[in-house]
Image (cartoon, rainbow, N blue to C red; front, side, top):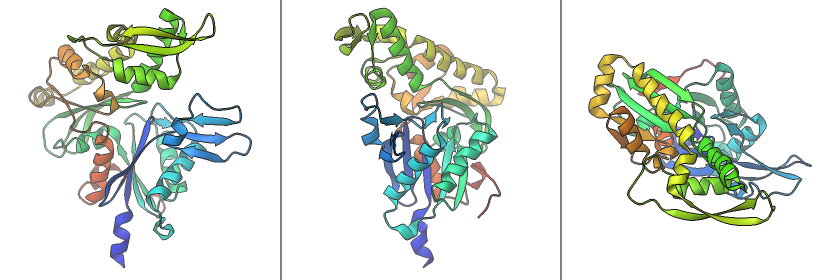
Length: 342
């Protein structure tokens, strides 16, 4: 009998932009946008994940597509809980499997209250025990860094809501910095720039697409151009503008600078022995932001350190949290423990 329960422990990377679920012995089984569409009149959830994301900026009055997490923390508790529950049920079709042990990732800078909200959401969504792991720790484990050795590992995890910079040694975080400037801020900067420079109003989904296709952090030999569609703020009619990668780089300069600065500040606070290790081993970039063209170059240029991009940057945190589930006893020390109800 005991064996049938093994498969149900899970790890959740509850991200501002995407939520990933890892199930023990199965790997990452779900990767969907953290969006919930709610009918305001009845209060019922209409769609979650991919279906809900398609509705952003396209809903009638009585339907709202909300992103329940903002800056890496829960902004809308009920929606988060509904979303979690929905994802858990998607993964565990059979009802009697309902009470998993769950490892949830949180940004390293969250307050005790924010942490409690995440735990509570996990319990409400049907977990038997909820454990918390800090995102940079999970990202480092997921990127395959030797976190338990006495050497310094530096990880820069650029997500949707937060950028986490941490130096890890001996299974713990030595110095860390969590700033609420990340992917979403880059999108926002593009929206603001297009408004100011071209009097063009963009939706947040379009801005994200522009960032993915044209966005870059460092000049390169070929700077592509693309047509961007939006609404003209003067005439109120749809209009297309041609924009180059160089211009988008200018648009996102401010949030980019904040990210680079966070890395600098963290390096500045790192004990000299560990700084030497990082000089040898380099900085590892993970998270969706690691996919921004030239971000590794930019960090190399500004810090003089070698920079590597993790093998699967979007999955690093989920895989790391998943390792905590697989090797529960061995990795117990990296979890933020609590003596809550069983």
